[in-house]
Length: 216
Image (cartoon, rainbow, N blue to C red; front, side):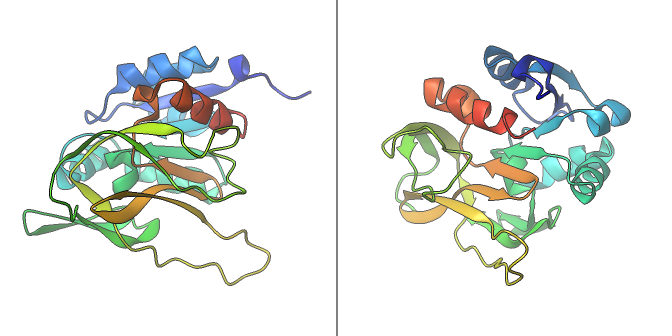
């Protein structure tokens, strides 16, 4: 029998960098059984792991490593266990980040560099639309003009990972534009992520989280 959303255990990983309470409330709103913790075993055994993130790329990576979050993410993904990153929690999934001329290593789950937004107004703060693939599961049930809440000064502007193995589903990349197009979300096997904040995006964000929980 398929588990209901209320039976899906989601851990919001608490490593000191993220709006964990907002994420907890948003996930509980859509029926998940949510716990905020940095406990290694609980994070490993949950149906889904959500990695939030706010602040500087390098500081988030330092905090994540101190909490063994890099091990948790890597080992969950090695076993095909779902992980979702939000905002800087998405950015640190890439190979590197450059802020104020300083380069820091990310988790390198995806190639690419998180770099300053190329726009007249920075940060990108407020509501914006996205261009999602037609077969996206993350954005299923959402209108093309659905708007999501962004707060960021950095992003990935170039996607370079391609899947050449026909047995492996190619990553689905969603884009948005602020000055120049940037990666707004990625669906790649067990690893999903958004640059925007679904927990701050009202009904559209709730639908997106519902879609994620439905895959757990």
